[in-house]
Structures are given as structure tokens and as C-alpha cells.
Length: 156
Image (cartoon, rainbow, N blue to C red):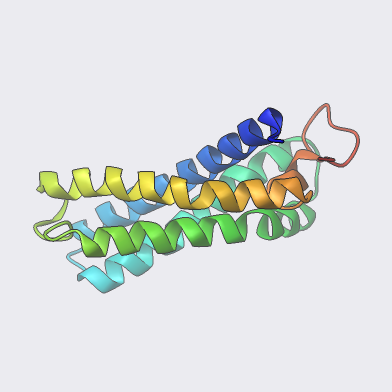
């Protein structure tokens, strides 16, 4: 039997992760293009920023709830790394596989269409990963125990 709460939580966790990844990807691509970097350095920058933004979006609520930075970062690294990694692999593979997506920079409409396709594919790929982890009390469930109003560990 399927747990609708688990599905909703997995979708929410995946969307949260996608938000950080998308911010990092787009900012990295903007900066890489503005600096005239080639595709490989730009992709490396974008992936690095995707991880940074993904981790930051998960760490900030924990810090606001009084968790020490090192403890919060440790929880977030354990909770989000696999999801972000899956998203980044899929996102970049799709972008690389769409002809012309990385040509002519950010003024290219093919780039933006490809980015939407790539981020959608990344969501689809990361959702089952997040659902699997949440069902076992791992992944994003690790951060939920520290959110305001949650006094116990997440149990599913």
C-alpha cells in the first residue's frame, strides 16, 4: 500500500532540493557565461553552486531553530547529498544531450527550454531516491526532526 503522506513529503523534499539546485545552476551558468568561461568550467561552477545553494536552503531553517552550524551542516550533508548528486548528474546529462543547449550562452532560447527539460528530468530522477530515503527515516527526514514543532525523530 502506498502512503500518501510519504509521497507528499517526498515530493516536497524533492522540490526543495530542486529549488537549491536550480538556483545554483542558473547563477553558475550566468556567472560562467558573463566571465567567458568555457562549457566545462561553467558546468563545474554551476554544479558547485547547486550543491552550495541546496545545502544552504536546508541549513538555514535549522540555524533559525537554534541548531549549531556544525551540527546543522552535518545533518544536511547526510540528508541532501544523494538527492543533489542525482539531480546534478541527470540535469547535466540532459543538458549535454540536447544539441545546441550549451551553445550561444544564455540568450539562446534552446538553452532555457533545455534547462526546463533537464530540471524536470532531475526532479523525476530524484523523487524515488527521496521517497526511498524518507521511508527509511533517512534523507530529508533527518532535517525534519530539527524543524520547529517536531520534538521527535521522523518515523515512517
